[in-house]
Image 1 (cartoon, rainbow, N blue to C red):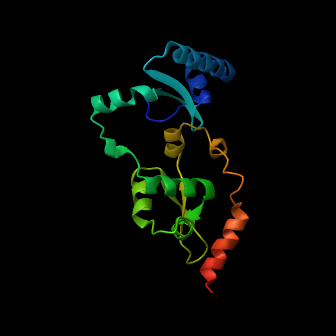
Image 2: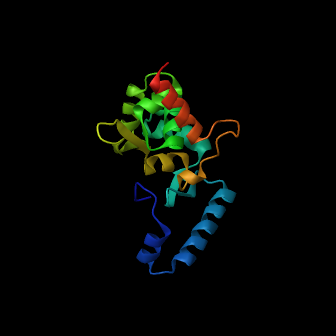
Image 3: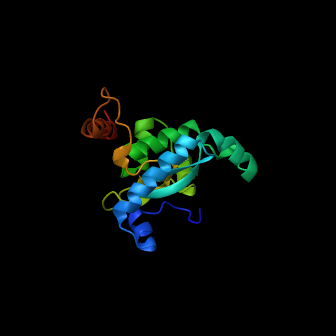
Length: 173
């Protein structure tokens, strides 16, 4: 409750002077206990650490108390753009726009401002800026790593096929 990011099991173990395995077991047991008691908060592992979160069913109460507006939610365009970045990162704005079929400049700026994506270098000399998701993104969706994201539907083309299609579009007729 005193940190604004997940705390790793190792950091907690170091701070408590207890083996990390014991801390991990106790945290998992505590998380189960909170879940069973249906408290207004829960303890979850996310982004490589542990953090206390408001329960989703209490979100409206927390928002009312803290004055957070419903506008804090991402638009459909922002969610789609974030999904493209999450599954194809590192990726340029141009690639994201090609996948979505629309301009994404303002949406990417919004995601940057909210700390959900960050710049990840350049695509070669003179190339576009590459973007990737942040640990804040992992925290917000409640997963430890990108590997925990659900798989894309099996009927969708893989990265190689998408790259080939996008390259063909870039080359023109």
